[in-house]
Length: 179
Image: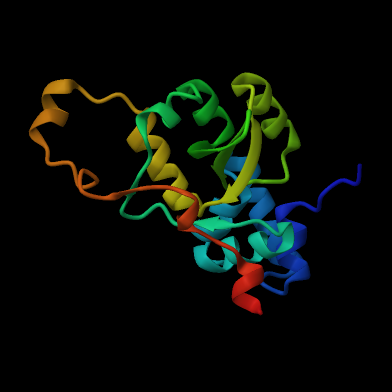
């Protein structure tokens, strides 16, 4: 199996950043421990939309926007908080085809096959990675996996109560957009 290129290599090849910017971002990443994509965004070297689109094209995978969408509680329950936070992923929805189930998994770093294998083993489903911007991904992990006191959350209106539940129709293929 051929190793997939790393995020930084993809962005350099796409002309979004240069080697010097990559080196500076890698230094910051080492210092602060953030994922490279988020580091590049925080440093102002890359806009989040450009990052997500470049990576989605490179990996030929769909993109999901989580804004205004909610994820079904039974889908969230498939990935324990520890794994979601540790791997920086959020389950989006499940698609069933016959006896097989496929978990669509929102992630920033699709090149980490270890994460995909770990979650496939844990869930017993095949995993289909979906690109999600790091900001939206972090907000979703906070929203679904950070425990809030019940009294505080019951007083606050739920902005997602009337929102659409995330599903396959919310994915965009950049291959189709380019055509």
